[in-house]
Amino acid sequence: MNKEIERKFAVKYLPENLNIESIVHIKQAFIYRDKLTLIRIREIKESYPADKQVYIYTLKTKGDIEYNNNYDVAKKYELENEISKELFEKLMNNKISNIIEKTRIKIPIENNLKVEIDIYYDYLEGLLTAEVEFPNEELATKFQKPAWLGEELGYKKLSNRKLAEMTKDEWQKEVTKEMIENNSIIIKQLKDNYNI
Image (cartoon, rainbow, N blue to C red; front, side, top):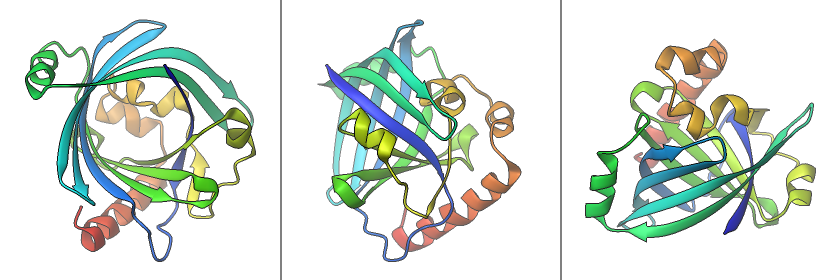
């Protein structure tokens, strides 16, 4: 079981000379959850650098979230397995959450880290977040974000688990109007310049 250590941010603007490592389209839902565990299924369609499609079944167990004045470090454990398209479709019929659809753009940054920008669709239209996953807790706590990343977004408010339970009105109450307006500008730039 892998330990997942990550932090989530708003995006202030796109860096110049954006170096995109990959672009994937994700459709996901939860099929089980309790206080300690959740099971997520995902359809992942990679459009850049190659065209490929996979289906993933993920078991996540609750780790902990380190809350500080300046940042939250989410620590969870997860086990992933590839499944067939047929099983994915069958499991989707038993979903217990909203379906989340998003495009994920992976951008390499210093220290062999990567920023994953998620552009959300449907009832989450207008939401844009950036996650950085870390190989260890020390790197996560010492991380100095690039200038183009904005405020830290707490996992209490905007985790995919929470978003899958929210309505449009509910998630919009968790962010500022200015953030939604800024997200719209960035999303348009990404669509215009990178065919997303």
